[in-house]
Length: 340
Length: 253
Image (cartoon, rainbow over the protein chains, first blue to last red):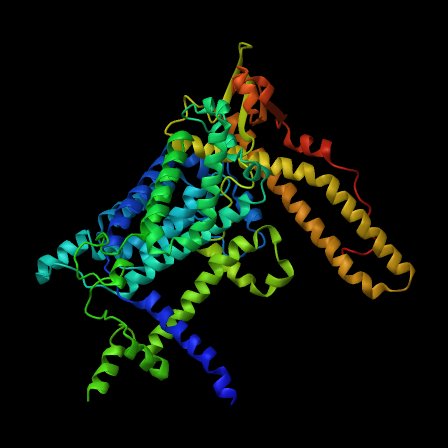
């Protein structure tokens, strides 16, 4: 009797487990990761290249950011580390900086990607830990994208590694893998967490409720790169943009998973982040957010509807691959019966 | 026969064994817990609930994942940069801005300096604003502790003493952060620009009302600027500090 009552719950639990397994472990093409590696790598090279212009100003003990500041900032959390604790002379700091940029360049082109991805990640984190006080959203997003590209096989496509392997083995394409899917899924979920908390934090602000938040952004003399203050005469437009931006950000974590809504959400993401980049002078931040949104593109980069054989799974981003088969009712039943 | 084949093909539906998938599931769940924990527990939120899960914060810190993601929130408000005035040997007064809209290039470097100005202003403003609150809270705790002692309920005063000491540690940490950042900036500017005297200001740029702009007032009007002098950060902080609170007769123990 008890088992009968519990059966629906047990079955839904098992169905959830099947869904979880398919969500995370279904093999996916590494193509998307390969493209994202190039873009994220280029951004790493650029951002760390810019640090070169003021390396000692921001990273040396005699600079504007005392090490004590970061230590006190992270006082309640062990785990702060940086290689700048051990290097201070101009020569060693310059050498380490050059090594970091070389590692990031190699990561970008996809040479020895496993090693250079890990090195790029470690350097990016280390710089961020040392430069606490001069960072912004760009560094946060760049950090997690690099992490997931280091976890996944980002060097398996559009890379020198792939070119060298193909040359030796005469292979044309890398097989889909579960790790490629896990890396992509982690990016997607993490991005949803970012938008969820960014949206919730905005709900605490009065200007997001009275519709004037966007005015605060466009009328900021320190951010402004393009004069949009003519909108003061068109406040209904400011209200509308504020409402659309808030609604988009708040609903993104929930509706981006719907394949019908996805295209619209991604298009809005591009417009909003491009707007932040162009009008507020934060092109690096706007660009990295657009790159992060690419995680929701199909992993093989084929658009939906391209090829009539595309299954629903493919349209959702999965690929035809040696493992992927349609989960029909019979196989689902067998899994429910305890196969997984 | 067919049934056996199907079951077999189900197993090959996913590339990893069940054990591998379970292990990966644990790792993914742990990682995502840390990703969500970081913004949820910012600024000591859910302190009592999350205390046993502090290891997640350490993990997030190691991987630089401990962020609040509060972009342009709660409101896009005033911005903060740094201004300095220096008098050179021939008596000329030179004023400078960090970042300088024209001189600080590329834009990413401008943003690095901009964020430094924001961090400095946030620390100074928070520290100064917290003086009054800190003083009131600590005074209340002292009175409660004294009352409990008077009533012979000394054991109940123990958590209050712990709270008093934790507040003091947090306050001192904030004070030190503000001072460290201000002093480093002052020393850096003094070293970079040899001058007879140098004065440093945290410059706050306010957001104008739309009708001000419609009436023709420019964004850069001085009405929208407020400054706090940080030439001697210790003196600036000391000036805003309340009178020293007397020791509660044991809280430090």
